[in-house]
Image (tube, rainbow, N blue to C red; front, side, top):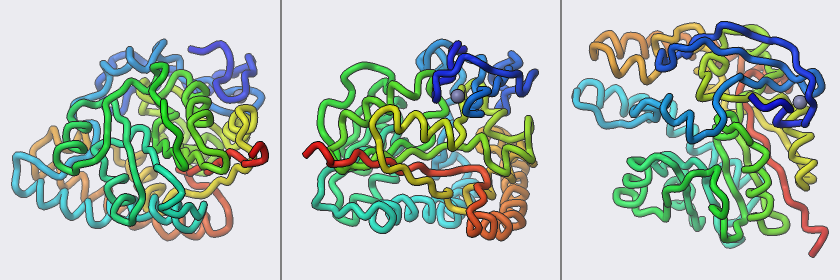
Length: 323
Ligand SMILES: [Zn+2]
């Protein structure tokens, strides 16, 4: 583990959770989470580099519609319509309405783009897009099936961002990195003046974190999750690297509701459900769906009164004062 907080550089920690099991059961080790005394961000005693932790990523880590079972494929199409499509639409809404970046302003880069579905959606509205991902199969699919400008790269490596972008999206990546600061630094350098970095992360000082504690699915994602920031930690880090306008918005209510549902019903996790009998796997996903429906309205109402429920998105602008 880093001796210093990866968000605020403080070297004072207190024990937060011990004996945490990997929710996917891939790592047999038990993990410990520490809380930074200064900013409250959480850090796991996980591996030295992201590349080392690759061993703990299962092959089916990301959602894919195609399955050997026809029934499962049909179910996946339904999940896609109900959950993934609105989430992709929301990325577009952030660009168009919340940070108000027009397509002609420049290129949008997605770091950790997965199979390219997010940038595919964004490009259909006229934006020029690029993507980076470390999973070979994802990059192959994005390049060959979706015809996108996507390349495979280790995001911890030097020199991965050699161009300048108007927006750089980093969705659900920072919490996997041992040195998130290094990636945010690269993002800042690769942005046009006035450009935006968009960072989606689980939030350590959210209601879900407080209520679910050690059972929060984001905590049990150790060792693939190495850190979880607080609002204070992220704002301190973004400001220290030069970003001046920082906004925090909740993720879609359905995302934070699913996050709660998976904490309460971990058998419904994608990796677990696809490696079980098709009927039992779908039954577990239906239970997750029912729990999501139960928590959707409370999450929606809490977000409306500015209470953060679990998953958030930081939008940070590189100001153009030096132009
Ligand atoms: Zn800290």
